[in-house]
Length: 459
Image (cartoon, rainbow, N blue to C red; front, side, top):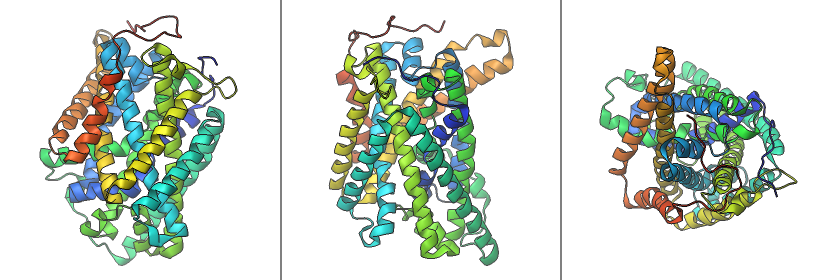
């Protein structure tokens, strides 16, 4: 085994597609919109638009940092270089924890959508949902282990088909509303009128959940043509595409469903929108197909993020050396992928002991948002510190690379800390406990390294 990934494997377009796939637009809408409407009500579209702003700030930071060092570890590596070994390790651990949590929340939509096709009477059954989710998870892992070339080609087909189906449903539902009228008339609250700080903070982690995943592009910086800069730009562009989809479906949900109905449609909201918009059973199954495709693409992207970050941590000595090895045949970090396969299946089956699918989704979405806020925030702070002197050359560059990422980081970390006070005990255990476990694995001195230098200096 070596410690070099396959370079120049992804084009810019493939990187952008990876960013969209990582955000999982169809499955995020399917399971996240109901929870968001239940929390934010009529403010749901505004919440998605507001929280797109700090996400763009973090994406700009990722792009700039990636230009300096296109590393598979991304946030972990940059934070280690700028802020120190412990913050860097915890940044990497937070990503590992977030991706593991997503193994549950990201697998549920694909299982539910599959049941809509083959056995709709079992939708909502926790055990059967876990069994189907586990089967899909294992199949996707086999594809990822084949290497980045096979995975990227699959992503191009899967994500393009997903986007086309979503656009058809969104446009057709809007036309249906134009013809027959809306359940809820448009209100300026949808765009934020009267939105209070408390209301905004309540939906913070949910909005983060929607957008999270685009950063898979930066974890593939070593494998992207043009390096980390191109990879980061692909992630930045992907956010603009998902903004339109997320805000559009939140608005459509309010137009075709009552708020009470929408907040309880946690299994597959796109299916319900398609059905209420007059598509019937076949249209609903088309929506389920989009969710299946989205979940497959998102799970692939999440496995890539986990495996590349664990690989980079092993290669740098923050984790055992065996995780920093690459298969000679596929040039992918097979050992790191096996870890997420085993842990993912354990968590998926563990979720079968929770009382309902709705509780699984609500808990995992909030807990994941907490982890993401932390490691995104550290990357933004790292960029702000690194580029703090750029005002000497250009004020606009300083705003773009220092001020914007810094403010975005403070917003995300601050809202994450506030959200902790609103968690129930289950979410606290999953979110805070999953993060704290990382301290057990931290070593003040590195394991044996496979790179020539221990620390990377940006200065």
